[in-house]
Each structure stands twice: as structure tokens, then as C-alpha cells.
Amino acid sequence: MSRKVESNTIRGGENFQDAILVGVSRTFALTIPQLPVPLRRTVTNAYLLCRIADTIEDDPGVKPGEKEKFHNRFIDILNGREDVRVFTRDLEQNLSMKTSPQERELVRNTERVIQVTRGLDAATQAILSHRIVVMCRGMPAFQRCPRREGLRNLGAMDQYCYYVAGVVGQMLTELFCDYSKNIARFQDPLFDLSASFGQGLQMTNILKDIWEDCERGACWLPRDVFAAHGYNLSELHPYFNREAFAIGLRDLVGVAHGHLRNALAYTVLIPAWESGIRRFCLWSLFLAVMTLQKISENPYFDASSQVKVSRRTVRHAGGITSAVCRSNVLVRALFAWAARRLPLASDVSTYRESKRAV
Image 1: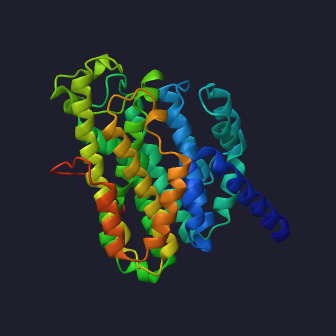
Image 2 (image 1 turned 135 degrees about the vertical axis):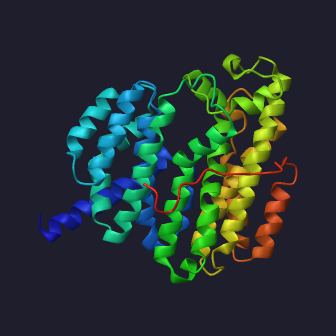
């Protein structure tokens, strides 16, 4: 392939990335454009790679054993050992109608996303490949277990959140440190907080989407937390034993709140002049905090739409966080105000693999 043709191919892939991002993620479509230009293409590509892996994991029509095979084949694509067109054809044929048209379109264009990946420098490709491998090898373990009754305990939920989102926090941290030597000075404390940041965001999504997940036969809640209040997750239903369920839900809101406090500590470690990266972190953080507030105020909700943050509120939050993002004092004060009515767990732990784990 000539350099001109290769350049045009990559540019076409980048245009596709920008277009599909709006369809597959409302949050990241808002936050990624806040990043410095050199990071936008890379982080968009990283997110879409993760989204392809998530689509395999989420689709109820793909059997657990087949999910693991597709995850392994996706790893092979990243390592240049699999024909991406054959993979795309096979995966698309296995997807159910419950996969959204936008996610189906993303899968259909996996080759274009991979073309952008292969246009990145070798160090960046290594970061993306390593973290996607960890994700794709970790998620199948949860597909082999019955999910209708929830996860065994809070530790299992920690582990699940790590493979789905904590690893993404680690990947982003490596990309940020690779981008800026000033950020790299704080690499160790950032890395220590990165998995917790991802877990806070993922726990918020799990709590918001409880009933939609329940409808498709999935439950990512920990049985031990609810059993402590006399609630059996095998009987999960929005109108069953509502008081006991609300207490367990409030406990998990407190745990997620603790992780988001770690996300705040992560964000203020980013040098103040890196305002684009700070905005990227803060928008995600404050959207999660506002969602937790809505869940805490209405624990009897029976649809995610009832606790979803409105677009108007999202825009308002974006404007406020942009205005204060350079000041640690103001950022901390804004967080304290936004989270003022949230419960807080006394102890927050997170599952983490080592930096060099595969």
C-alpha cells in the first residue's frame, strides 16, 4: 500500500470514528473533544476498541463459549494473527436484535477502526493492545457464571468492574503519561487511583441500568450486600421487597461515591495547565456524581430514564467544570457541593492487576 493510499485509508477511518462515537456513547462524545488534539484520535480509537469488546460481552444472543472465542479472535486481530473481515462477518451474524444499530455499525466497520490503530506509533499501539488483551481475557470468566442471581459478593463486583472499566482507567493513564512528561511525574499515584476511577464510573452505570440489565437476564449486583438486608437477588424485581432493596442500593451508592472521591484525587493530580485532560476527567466525574444523586433520591426507580441526567444538565455541568477546572480548590468545593447528600462507604477497595499483568 502506497503512503498516499495508506494515509487516505487512515483518514477515512478517523472520519468514521468521529461519526460513530456520537452514536455509541453520549458521554465520551462530549468528553473526548475536550482532550488536546494529539490525544483525541488515540483515545477515540481506544474507546471504540473497548466498545467492540463490550459489544461481544453484552450481546445476549452470543453464547458464553462463543463470546470467549470472539474475544480471543479480537486479541488475534490486534496482534495481526486474524483476518479482520472474517471476524467482522462472523461476529455480525451472531449478534442479536438487542444490539443497537449503532453498535452493529461499529462492528461492521471494525476494519476501519483497526486501520486507525495501526496508524498509531508503536508505543501507543502496545499500550492499547496490552489493555484490550487484559479486558478480553478477564470478561469471559463472568460469562461462564449464572448472572440472573447477581455476583457472589462485592469483591466479585470489584473484579468485574476492573475488567470492564478499571483497565480503561489504567490505559488512559498510560496514554496521558506518554503524552506529557509533566503528567508522567505523577505516574505512580495516578496509576494507583486509575482503576478506582474506572470502577466508580462503571458502578454508576450498573446502578443506573439495573432494570434494563434484568430484562435481558443479567445482574451485576453483589448478593452479599443485599442479603445483609434480607433481599434475595434471585427474586430481583422492581416491586419485590422494595424497602430492603433500596437499603442495599444505598450501600452501593456509598461505595461508588467513595470511588468517585478517588477519581477527584486523580483529577487534581493532573497539572492545572493541562485543562483539556482535566475537563475530560471532570465531565465524566460530575455526570456520575449527578447520576448517583438521582439514584439516591429515587431508589424506587424502575427504568434508567428516571435517573438519567438531562442533556440540559449535562451542558450546564460542562460549562461549570470548564470554568473551574484549573483550580484544585474550586474543583474540590464543587465536588463537595455536588456530592453533599450522597452516602459514603467507610471502606472502598478495588480490584487491580499489576501494571505489567497480561
